Length: 225
Ligand code: C5P
Image (cartoon, rainbow, N blue to C red; front, side, top):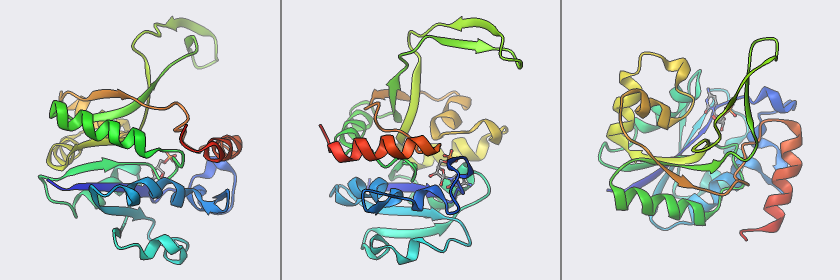
């Protein structure tokens, strides 16, 4: 089985408040997507890196990384899951796929290796996740607290998420509630298939809001510690 990385990068990322898609903003002299791609391009066991781009993307082709021999691009879709599926269709069904958000620039090769090791050892899909630290509340629509959600065994789902391509493609294609498929694991869960959690670094944040840019810059300046 080959290991193939899939990087959905077809979103517009409006919440970050910039005029260009967030993955093309720069942090420490490199775009966010270049940081997100770097460890996948560096790891020798990952053979292909497929980036899913918006149809009218005007930025990716001019990045130096676009010429890297491992890089391929596909046109993404309206939702994240459509962008992921467009890339999965280019991959052998027996191969392992690692799906990683273009908007998570602080991913380390250490965490990727930990995930790969876990999937190979247990022969089951797995995701990186970090433990919830705060007391969690559920509210009603007017922000009045309904209850405290038990924090034990509660995790933030991160990426990459790793599966055998066939299992992931089947789970996505069979799914009847695409609006609930906000990550790859959710598609497998809804098909009743088991997925492991691998504890990952909590600094593997997704750049969503403007303040995340400063935090990501700080983590990237620290290197892998
Ligand atoms: O918007 P959000 O932060 O949840 O997006 C997560 C990742 O999915 C981003 O890297 C974004 O570019 C990607 N995405 C995509 N196609 C979409 C929507 C989001 O590839 N239609």
